Image (cartoon, rainbow, N blue to C red; front, side, top):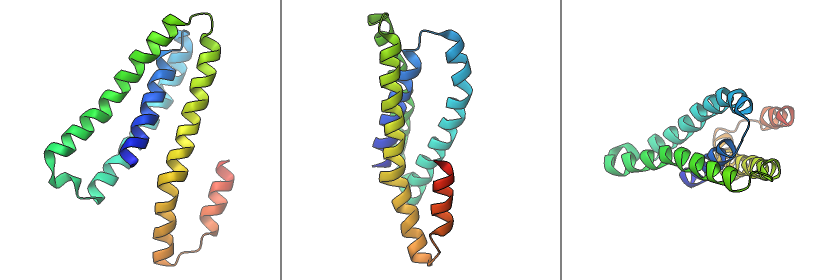
Length: 138
């Protein structure tokens, strides 16, 4: 499930970046996006290791390859959208950024936070630090 969620998130990220007609905006956003990708790849890799996926090497390589290709697919689709709708690119860009943000929240709320809450329950850790950090993050 995390693979699917992060792949959709990467696809939307690529579409958003690819549809941006402003080269300076792309340059400003590229480094934060690349740093973000490191953390999402780490989360997915950790999930694969925890699930024993490394023992099934062909499936592992196939999923990782597909995960990488979603970036290029998203960039290509975004470039096509930017060329096809040049007059509405700012509206399309806003819609794509909203979808990207929503997919990020969906990944966090649907996959990551419940897993961490379950670990906290099993280890009998207090939830207050997590709630405070979530509150400060928003």
